[in-house]
Length: 336
Image (tube, rainbow, N blue to C red):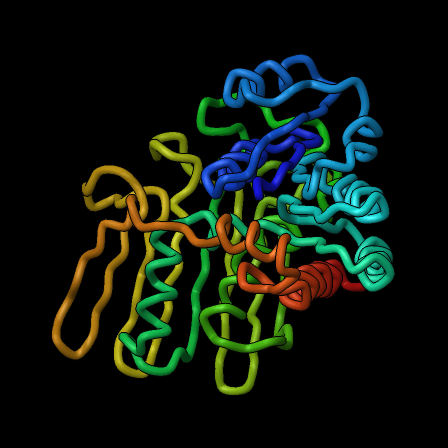
């Protein structure tokens, strides 16, 4: 049976990765909707097999569609997901899926009421081959017991091609703050690699240092998570220098009792070409893994779960926990 899906809202470029993930897994793109002609044109060029519809309602009322994916403006993602689930469909959102605790509470209620899935594609893990390979190595005991993760998520404010960011980027009510937005990736990775279900926030801080012309914009954030004897330090920022040939030198370091792994997701500034670089140091020496072609299981597992109602791709509880921790860290940083 072929799973049919639709895409709604192209405000963030992650919609291309989400759509490709579903297509590569064997799903069929039936239809899509957005209200911006430029975004529609870009999406149509990338995915000509879909059909542009006149309204969101046309997608919601199409009983052949099993799941809807969206990368709309962050504060619109949860309300859309509620509508999708109330129309009998599962939902795959970009991160962050929530801009407030109130949105999170409402989605939890509707998930319980409908039995539908409201999932977030944390693409720094689920869409990154090197991170998937690291998870396999950690699960096999390559570095012993995980003690700490260090996740850094730098970004360039004006995009890799120096295009201006959309207006909503600069209004905190729309994206929820830097720790809620970018930091959710690193929270997801800490919980996953540490093998824990929850965490405490020891400290959280945000600042606006460089781009002070945007008073609601946070260009720096950091937090420390703890769970038992495990910890996760997270740093996110918008300071990627113009001379770096990528939007951000995103890294993840996983420290274990018998070694450590470092992932350079977008670039190896030591000179190796391409992305998805993994370095492993253990008792026997140092290894380098080129992970660019390592398979990603998230898409096939998600389609499996849509049919069986299992949770092999990502659990609903994990999705909610990551999102709640991100909101709590943001609230702590903002003094609430």
